[in-house]
Amino acid sequence: MFKNTFQTGFLSVLYSLGSKPLQLWDINVDQGHVKRVSDSDISSSVIEIDSEKLAETHISCPMNASDSLGITLPYIILVVKNMKKYFSFEIQIQDDKNITRRFRSSNYQSTTRIKPFICTMPLRMDDGWNQICINLKDFCKRAYGTDYKRTDRITVHSTCRLRRIYFSDRLYSEDELPAEFKLYLPVQQSTETEEA
Image (cartoon, rainbow, N blue to C red; front, side, top):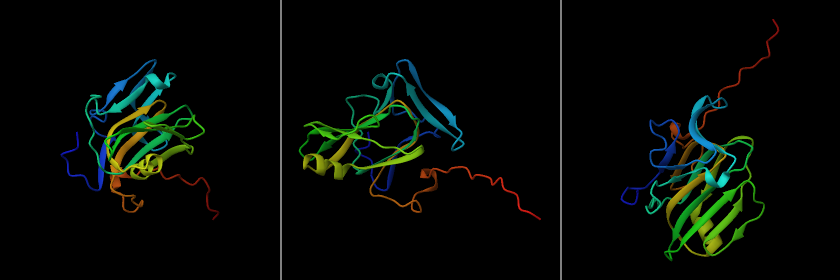
């Protein structure tokens, strides 16, 4: 999908405010939903993935399983809300040995397990909105002793709310991020009154 695209800085694959935020994504739903909702914490539209059947309700990019994202940027960032339910996501990459590997992170697993083609890791999230940043180059080197080549596929399972999923060439400070990549929380009004 993006292999012929000049890749530097930021490359967004999901943005909840876009006119068609799931245009590139395959949607699978079983006894749940994937829809755009309004999130009161950030006063904005987000994508909600919700179901009691975690494995059966998810979104995947690219839409066609035989296609590849072809993204070479080494950092993936998910801006996601902790809904206090089971949640997982998986990133399928190819390394410099042309071996397909998967990194799966979930909030219901307690230990890291490395198998030849999949590495599963626990995910700890704070309450509310989180920015999950994964250095795929580092993960690939530490888990398999190989070099990261590209990301082929992303799958996000229920239950969560998504604001954005993007890739970057390096870690950026909050001050360096473009305005549309920042998550703005509404300013809380003070309820205290000054005495005259």
